[in-house]
Amino acid sequence: MYIKEVVNDMEIRHSKSLEAHKLMVLELDKYLLGGEVPNNLLSHTSLYFLAKFHKSMLSFRLLVVSGFNEDASVILRTMVEIAIVIAYISKEPEKKIGQIY
Image: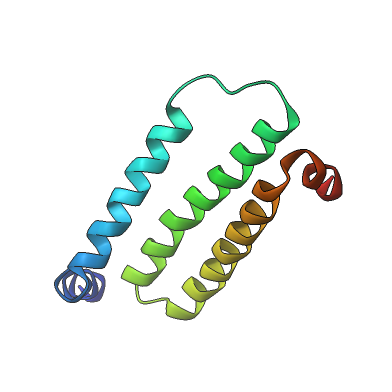
């Protein structure tokens, strides 16, 4: 019973944020499932980080809706770190990939 109440409260109070989250997940789904991935290190690395970010987004929402805010903050930190890595790689992809691996 408690979980249903939390979910209902979350959906009422944060409907705009949840809708934005849903749209982001759908966009990532399209990208991740959208076609062939070139067979090179940059593509595979990017796909790895995007897939990890996608999975983390889904986990984050589940934890928040379930009332596990502290655990969600750990996932959020992971998402921030992934975003930083992707931004870092995107500046000079060929050079930066070598530094990561």
